[in-house]
Length: 161
Image 1 (cartoon, rainbow, N blue to C red):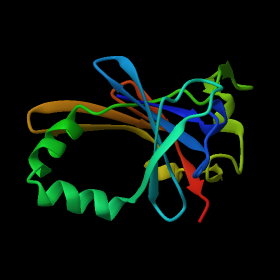
Image 2 (spheres, rainbow, N blue to C red):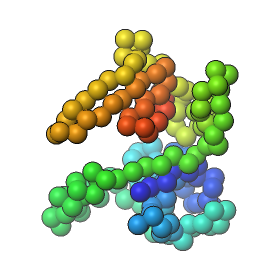
Image 3 (cartoon, one colour):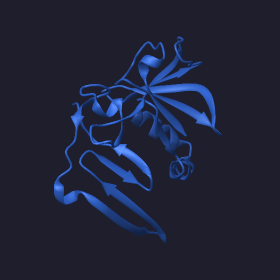
Image 4 (tube, helix red, strand yellow):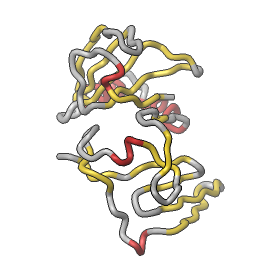
């Protein structure tokens, strides 16, 4: 699992696009985080703690990471791990909007964390969609700015180039 926080939670030498990905193993925080910059370079840090400086271990491109994985025959392992990977957005405090719908402060902020504001989903795409892939049933509900996939809510934004 990876917890997603604003980079200002830590003291980092490079904040990337403003989000820090905190790596956990078996539910335990490892002290490893990474950020991603606009060029898709990944900055990896160790000993990351809330409010404290973290030590930068390396900067690596996503393509170099993929090459390393493939050269060492670990592609199947990565694909297997990806099936159970989870990203938990802990970037905002829960509140409610003017309609009483659950939201968070992060959803209402424009220009922060690489977004240019909420994405307006076209009306004909909104609603509840059903899928039965590989004998696994799932539902996806799409609203004006969000998707709910099997109970997990994802906010949709225009990406800042």
